[in-house]
Amino acid sequence: MVNEKIKKIAQDIKTMRIRGAGRIARAAARALKIAAIESQVKTPAEFSHEMETVSKILLETRPTAVSLPNAIRYVLLGLKQAHGADLWTMKKTICSRADDFIKNSLEAVKKIGEIGANRISSGDVLLTHCNSECALSIIKTAFKQGKNIEVITTESRPVWQGRLSAKELLKEGIPTTMIIDSAVRHFIRDVDKVIVGADSIAANGAVVNKIGTSSIALAAHEARVLFFVAAETYKFHPETLVGRLVEIEERDPNEIINLKRYPGLKVRNPAFDITPPEYVDLIVTERGIIPPYAAYAIIQEIFEWKPGNGPRHTADKLKPSI
Ligand code: RUB
Image 1 (tube, rainbow, N blue to C red):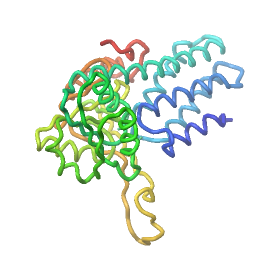
Image 2 (image 1 turned 120 degrees about the horizontal axis):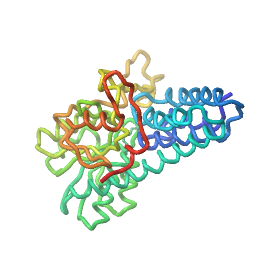
Image 3 (image 1 turned 45 degrees about the horizontal axis):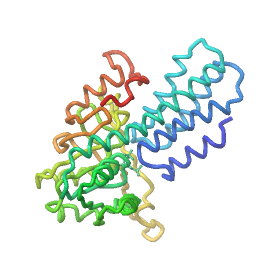
Image 4 (image 1 turned 45 degrees about the vertical axis):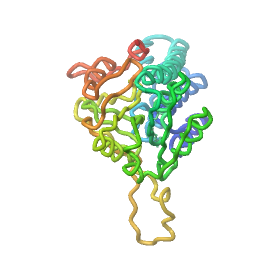
């Protein structure tokens, strides 16, 4: 029987009380740790089975952010590491890998802020979309370094994550202007750099992020404005190396409009879109800045991928190295 706390975390991810790819990943690691601590089973085999069941529930919440399966893959590698061990050791291994993931993830966000802030100059006007911890980490770090910056944030309809960003930025004292999503091209010439996060990055460097990101990238490209993506290396999608496409989540149309009032109206509500690598100038990761075309090399290294092997996700490779 699945623990109520796990069901609650899964439900919170589904309904977006927990949202943003990094937070979702950490919540999944936390859920696996809770499941391990509170497990009532008696044998290692039953325990492995229970962990797989919990993972399945978590994986079914939201399909696009690869940080979720990557976090689970990272924690569950503990089952393989502790193979043949007693139940207590297995539980301990899962708990310590979950703790490791959470700690490394938080460190990565900080490191991305430091690395990315080096590319921000005093006087810059930055545009951000949605609400990305990593993108905001760069902006906040640059501001804390004393750089005189301004931020334009979109509303990010239909769920208004731009309001979260605006609140966070204002709390830091950063001058912030909000615009409607469709006003980006109108204002793009006032912008020096666009900084967004990512839910998944494919092996060819294509970036999956909040719906509207690709239109912003297109406008930035047209106006020769730099387009930065800020993402931890667990946002790189290992299966895209062998042709898997990233699933784009389509959410409830009622997020956009009350369908009861418009009988017969068809509404589409994709939550994410894909920005081709041609429109991305650089990706700031905790391991350093890379061009989008280096995504392949990152995936190969982080996941120890070799032709014919499935991806692994090891402890050492997640640690910031720069
Ligand atoms: C969130 C979103 C964010 C990325 C990166 O979408 O698209 O830009 O997840 O965020 P949603 P972070 O609100 O639908 O989850 O840098 O915080 O991981």
